[in-house]
Image 1 (cartoon, rainbow, N blue to C red):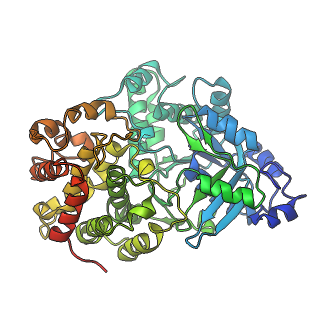
Image 2: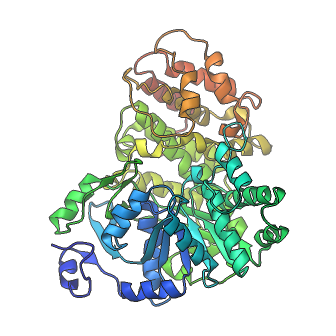
Length: 545
């Protein structure tokens, strides 16, 4: 039997017997080097980081390209730091789940230090501030999800906490973006050293969103006389601070009991999954798929390690944006969200089971190949058609990936503007296309409105996944009953006209009424969701092999 905290040098044979690859470097030496010369901070200690970023760092450490490890700053859940990182000596078992059912297992020790970064934790606050004051720090990466960047409510107004941060100043902000701005201000005051702030979160133009959020806070501080003009100059000077854009792609579900059971069978002890008080699902191991991409704008004013030697594609902003638009707005995320919405309504508990349903498969094929692919710009570094082929034929059907529609449905209100709004905009802008020809995007939007009812296709209640807008949106459809006549426009008009959700007033661009029509079909009775999908695919779709 082996466990994460075992000496992987002395017990290398035992790890090998369990099929676990171990690091080729000393974790102790890496930690010492990181204390002296920090290089890389990552915000967000969740499953994607543990299975992707940390593995990239491990590859660089194994090759001697990087001597310093990653400092993890968890901004949301202190229990993750205490019960997962600190409890296991900052180590991770990364498990790649191949389609043939096999598991590739690596003990990852690239995290040199981990901290709960929140103003309620003075020790962690001071520690990370000191790290940012060190001129050796080259870059910070982020995987904190869309809502981690949010400073505004559904009406576009600054939130209560954002306003408080702007008034109170840089000492102890409450929002994520205020806290990061505090770190950059500390660096500015100390030495004005250059740094790259790299969002690797899964949405389009992520670098721009990070930059805008930081500047919103910083401008507020300046207007209130809390920081000097030089700080704004520092943030806007690309020889000092950059906000590179990126595209990231690796399906990383919550740790699965099935994987835990397999690990136990090969003699790995640390397989207990933690469900924290803040509803984080995490474990000493992380499970992920084999296919992955990370494309980053090569804008690092303080230098960087040779990330390309660990599989990262470094390129210019336009190429990053094209690759990201391809994935996030067309070839993956819209399909995933559609499966999440209808998977909940149809009672599915896994993605691979959904794509065995020929109607759902037909839905996402038409969504991807017919409506999205024609308006996607080829980024050249990744072929969009091949990307969708790989997704539909290899990635989604992988029975070894324990991903669920419930996980993917989290925060859907924050995703719709990007995952469907960008494609809609192309149909509005390009003369060769007509937004009136869209059928499957309106069906998915109607499906989301139907999902908000919290009632499945059999008329049974189910739990909605976490979403910051549920409190606002659920009441608008709460009194609708399946099979009963209802004024659909009355119930949906406030939702479908909300530009913060979709990027448009859907009525003004000619899609609101079509969404209402599909919604009316979806609520016509039990099993109406399944029937509507089947009918739409048959009547409006194209058959794809």
